[in-house]
Length: 389
Ligand SMILES: Cc1ncc(COP(=O)(O)O)c(C=O)c1O
Image (tube, rainbow, N blue to C red; front, side, top):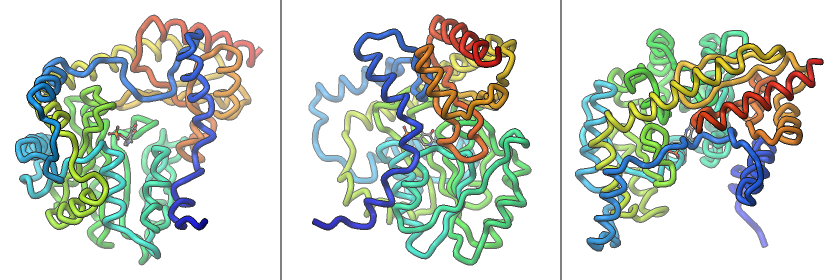
């Protein structure tokens, strides 16, 4: 039987990088001694008021169909959050609630690009981007942010990558895995390029709640007709399993996104929407809890790894990851990941999953228990010492 060419566009790439992670997760489930630092799932519970609201709503029978765009009061809460964060004057017509930022990226990609188009993505990039951006039929063009520049955007390379076929620019700020936040100056240049070439700017801000004061510089207020902001509760509120995210963009995009969500989702669970609205009503406390949690553990891990000869940590602007430069050990990020797991049962992620410039790096998630981090530091030190010796 035949399959659509689409299935090729969404499979394959990046899967090697997860080999160790999946093995580690399975070992952990079997009760083995494994330290899992390979995924960005904060080791914190859902904020209690959001959890209680979901339970209450389920008990009250909130198990029926819901509006495809999301409930009005939730979209109002999202619009208010976005206004406060970016200064862009938006209302519910700019907002659609979707099943996480991943789903919002997919919907955006499908609605703004097609066969024959190019979409630029700034590297390092989240490993789901190639499939998510090329599912539309467009070709993804990678613009690396050089390791030598601390993974800051290379604006000359970005400008050089734009062709008459370019439709959109996708980036995550703060970045996963580098933690780099695009500066106001960088965004001014990006905004100018977007204006001159009529490009969509898709800003993936899932980690924005973890940036200082929960904010990152944004072009949304300046270019309301061209900017799509993607966000979710996964990281900022430690609610990844709820699949609660959204996009904020021009009303016409939201109309098309609704049609796509109608085909794909036909409305999301009401009790999740109630929990999401409650989570947004306690954002200040919820976000500062995750931010502080991450900041303390980031400093703890940085201090623990600093004195290990042969590796070097990049200090992230924000987020829950740090990149470890392992080039001094003579191993690639991939081999470091495999060997560290084989010998010490610590699972980290090969930087190569995020692009070529991160090949000599591994990504370490620090949003976990301090006792585990202490143990991980001991094991990483022992492993690196054995290599360097
Ligand atoms: C940069 C980036 N974008 C999007 C996502 C997906 O987030 P969500 O859980 O909201 O789908 C992630 C998750 O790790 C991410 O790192």
